[in-house]
Length: 242
Image (cartoon, rainbow, N blue to C red; front, side):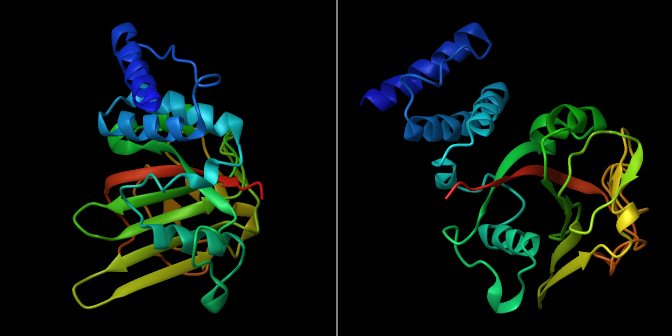
C-alpha cells in the first residue's frame, strides 16, 4: 500500500509542479523506482521518465539488472545477441539469458519520444560512454544499428576503434536474416561529427543522412544504400556489477 501511495504522490507532485521535484533517494525503494518508471512511461510523462532514467544511470547500482529492456524496436533476444557481439561471442558462445549477460541497456533517446534531430542526440547521447543505436527502417520490419565503444562528443573527426560494429535484423514472410559487420578500417571506425554526419565509417551507417553503404566495415548491413527512419533508439551500455 505504501508503494502505491508513494507512486501516486510522486506523479501527482510532478503534474502539479510541471517539473521534477520528487526525491528518489530516501523513501523510494528499488522496486518503487522501477514501478514509477513504468507508470510514467505508460502515461507518456516524458520529463519524468528522463529524470528517473538519469537518476538510475547516476546510481549504477546492483539492482539495475532487474530492469526489463525498454525498447519498442529490438526484442530481448536481439539485445542478448548485441551484448554477445560486444564480447566477441558468436554461435554457441552467445548469451542466452539476462543472468549471463554482463550488460544492461539503458534508454537514452527514442526518436518518437524525444525528437529525431541532431540537437536531441547531442543533448541526450553525447558524453555517455559506450552506446548502441538501433533504427527501425520505415516501410519495413528491418532494423539496422551500430555499437560505439567510445563517447560521442561531436569532435568533428573520425575516432579509431577496433571494437565497433554495425548490424541488421531483417525479416520477410519466408525468413529472417541477421548481419554482423565488424570494422576493418579502424582509423575511420566512428564518425564523431557534431552534425548530420554522426555515424559509423565514411558511410557504412550515417544516422541522420539515412545512408548505409559499405566503406570501412566488413559487409553492407542493408540491401539498399539509403533508408528512412520510422523510429530510432540509443542505449547506454552499462557494465553490471556482479
